[in-house]
Length: 154
Image 1 (cartoon, rainbow, N blue to C red):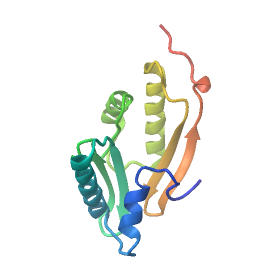
Image 2: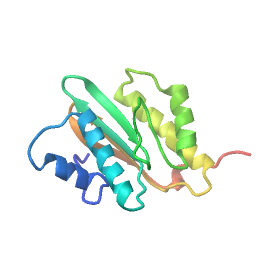
Image 3: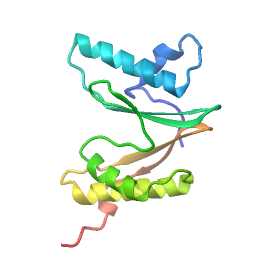
């Protein structure tokens, strides 16, 4: 398991700006700051990014925000974007419930990955699962190559 951001992560520049002064921000404050930066960037040049921003605040617990390509901010319980999001969100709508354990959440993510692999003609070959909780951010595991997926029956 790996913790933290890696160079090249889309949020790295935003997080560097926010934390360079050593001032801790709540997840809501980080989401609103990021939304403001994206909104400003949109006014200057064409800019396209979708973000799921997750965090854990000691006082209020876990938070997840969805920020879309036009800098619209939504607080959500679950989220996905891209072509696979149609399949993932339908799986999440069916199986997600508040208070899930980490094991239940990982099983749900695996269901989403299997659905994407079976339905998309060009599915991503690899997936990385990251966990954000009171212990910080960590890379949980990789789900590798399409070879380990049984072909869907006709």
